[in-house]
Image (tube, rainbow, N blue to C red; front, side, top):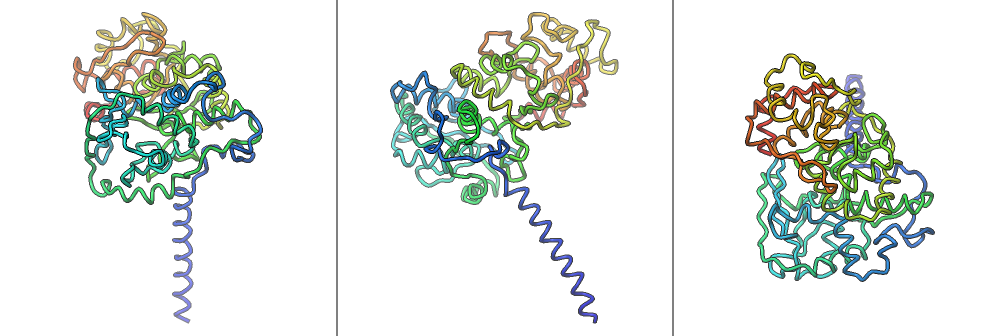
Length: 445
């Protein structure tokens, strides 16, 4: 009788533990594919009845292999990660600072000793699709092979053909500096088994050729989800919240779902096209940080038909609302005396260095490119992107709009925290509450 009394609770506890473990495994390991939301059935590329969504746009279909490879290389945004500021193109060495150390991008010029000049086509395909280098080294998913795995063999080899025409740069790769256990590359075997499908792009049969082309560009080539999708505990894209917002290089990468409040659901096709092509759209703000880089190096190089395909696909992404992206605040007052009353230092800095360009209303005193009101950054309660713009400036948009210089050396961490809080309180819907330590951390990273 007593044995039974103990057996039943133990059995119940075991079932509960297994249920919890099963739920955790489901949440962490069994993630939907990036096109699962579209419904319908995915078919092999050879069985798709409409125009192929892979390769280059129709206007370049007759171009030679190198021209096609260059277009695909630009679309894949390879230069952004494999080129340092002022460094030789594609020679690597760009640092990726992570909570557990620093990774450095490798040299992908055709140098035979320090680049990929001695790699075979099969080795290049394996690296792009499986995240395994020529010598068998497992690559970290900072290289987005979980997205690039969807690229067709022909497209990957076209990219390789173009890279082979670049000037070889003899520049040894910098060793990574990661703490244990993150410096154990063999662990990527398990990460890849769970999170790299190692399958090529399969179009959705019930969707148009333009939609599938957009999906191929967004999910595979441009790998937008790598920045704009939140990560799970194992640093894989949480595709249950695809495009609901993530981060890149210390910046927030905002929600780009079709939600009208948190995402881009209320943007017109024209605004989206202008923003993607130039990094600016009136009333929507200017691309900064990694997004500005993506526009300059990649998106601005795409044909109008490919930009339209991206828009068609993105407008179909299910809306996901997030408290991290609240409703935008209404326009601010033009009076300098308006705004928060409890932040005199922030107002002082804004008056001294910001108001002359941005205006007290935030509408942009020198032009729409300097607008703060109505932008996602000014309405971000973390104020991270506001701080990053103050520290590093905005860079030059492809459309030639106003460039904000860096004020990182001009102001202390305390002053930058104060003015960032002032900006979000005056022009945003939810004020931030940064202090000097927060800015110091962002400055360091």
